[in-house]
Image (cartoon, rainbow, N blue to C red; front, top):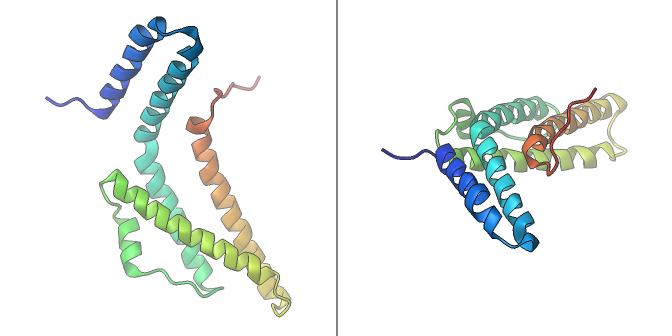
Length: 159
């Protein structure tokens, strides 16, 4: 019987907390606590990462398709297939997400440059600005998703 990743992480966290932390000098106790926190973060990320990556890739693809009508971008069929039927392997999903994120960065840069072009007519400029705002909002949502596990300090509930 094999041990799953969550059980492995929990065992290492327990070992560090129970056996190592009391035995180390106070000068490096903070390092051990930081390692325990990192293991907790990894467990959280492993738990939700595949679903988040898939949802974000779908959102990036939808916005990319919407952008194609305004600026010259292409979305190949292979990329669409990978997003519709996401890879079962988390590493492959991460690679797909990196590819899509790179494409989003490229589109954002094109939109930023295009907005500064004096040759754009007012209506066209508004379309570009609207798409840029949509990209920024999407990127903000994606970043917000990661704050929960990337934050050093626990989020406190507001009164």
